[in-house]
Length: 180
Image 1 (cartoon, rainbow, N blue to C red):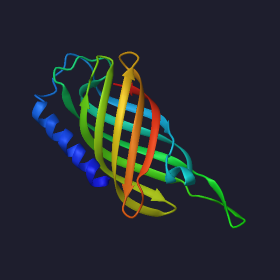
Image 2: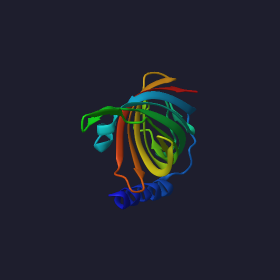
Image 3: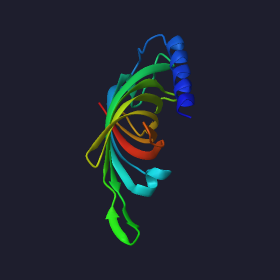
Image 4: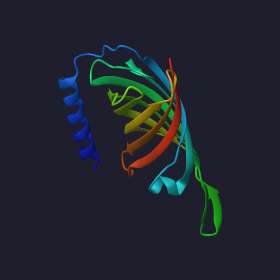
C-alpha cells in the first residue's frame, strides 16, 4: 500500500506542476497556524487515546477568503502532535503505554475549490519519539479547511505515518486555524 500512495502523490504533483502557472492571487493570506485534536485509528487506537497538535503552514496567498489566479499552488508546513498512551492490563498486570510525539516537515500541493475553502495534499519526513526511542518516518497529510472569515477557519485532516517495521498509523482530526 505504501508504494501505491507514493505513486499517487507523485502523479498529483506532476499534474500540479504542469497545470500551475504561478501563484499570483487577488487576495488571501500567506501563513496559517492551526491547533486541533486527532483520534488514532487501527492498531494505533489500541495503545493511544487521543492527540493534540499544532501546525504552521505557508503558501502564496492561499489561506482565508481568497480568489487565486491559478488552480493549483504549492504549500509547505511543519507540525507536531502529542498522543496520550492508554492504560492496559496484560496477564493480570496494569501498565500505561507511553506517550507518542510526532513532528513533521511536509510539502505538497494546495487548491482553492471555492473562495472560502482550501484542500491540500502534502508528504514529507517525520520524526517520532516513543518511550525514549527515536524513529524517522514518512508521513502524508490530506487537509481541508473552510474559512469562516478572512482570518479564522475550521479544518479536517487525515494524517498517515509510516515507520520502518511498523504498520501504518492513521490519525484523522479537526482543528481551528488562524491566518495572517
